[in-house]
Image (cartoon, rainbow, N blue to C red; front, side, top):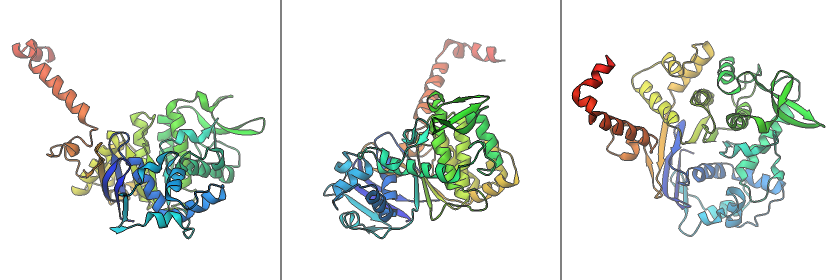
Length: 390
């Protein structure tokens, strides 16, 4: 899939998305970003999704509206109506036929980490698919179930889950220790035979509900990254080709966001296509820097310097691969249209591009107001302001 076009679906009047190796969606809440990313998943993995719904006894009766309620969440059938259209690579998709008829089951090709990922850990352990209510979005349930399978199949021994020597490169583990976990290790504990994830520092385990907000948000994301980056020499998980992460920045300090962005580059270097939705200017700063480095022949060391990361052989290999990748950025307007703002030119005549989809508006306004106030101050007029700074 190189292009997805959505028309008259929910808040979206028209979104024509052409994908790069990294595709970023920005815009205010309820502008259609999540709906677009979930349509990607639905169209790519229809057969696999249908099979999973049948396995867990969810019957949509071959009806499009019922299927949309099951997949997007209760009450979401209203996003699809008589004028709604979906096109893949310019060709119309008969959605009623695609969802109403059993499609050939395929292995999963899209791995989606939802914005509601904090909901997946009930008392510190991933919830199974069937433990959610029928009206909960499919993507939350499926992500939670994959984390549960990861825990039950691949982490059955002793020792911490983080840091773990065969998961993530040592450089990433060090950075995550500094920015997210501090002196804590992520471990599996038991209370009356019930497993739970805890943070361990010394003898006393800290249960899920006393973690910081950032730690609660990050641990499901970390487990998702473990799923995508298997141990050993295997670069990718199964037949997964695309990774979708919604609002990766939630709950995280800017330094921790930078480490997660390094891990995004790692995913890209392994051959995944990555789609992100975000409200963080840091994500767009990365895209802007990548485009500038490509254009002006910057190197791997320049990219690593952007993150203040080491120039180890493993990171340099990742950075060399990341610089060769392509990026796209789209702004979802509240009115329903979607604009390509990939150039991210602050001097653009298009307000949406100049403000990076609104993410720079407050910063620009603050600069203007402060400059205006300083210029009109008595100290500036008398020259005392400059005397004070000498």
